[in-house]
Image 1 (spheres, rainbow, N blue to C red):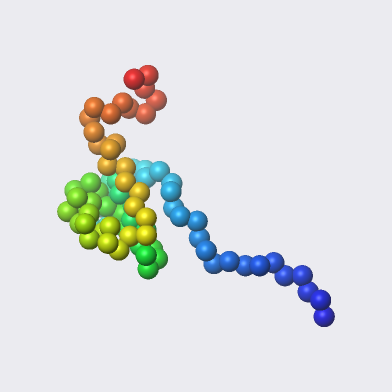
Image 2: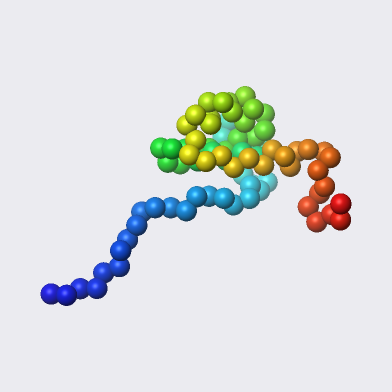
Amino acid sequence: MNRNEADVTTATAPSQAVLTAGDRCDRCGAQAYLRVELQTGGELLFCAHHAREHGEKLREVAATVHDETHKLDPAAPAAGSDA
């Protein structure tokens, strides 16, 4: 019997989507500015405060870190501005 079967993979693409106001900190519920994809799978979201508080430990267990805390810099130009 000859069957055509596609190879299947369970690998997932890393989550590199921009964080939005709907993404909330797993510690306090504030807007998240840091996404940590864990080496063991899954992800954690943190506000800037908790990202700083737990940053060193998070980087030890992270596969990837997506950091958008630069958005909090008041000197940074707003999105869509001509600056």
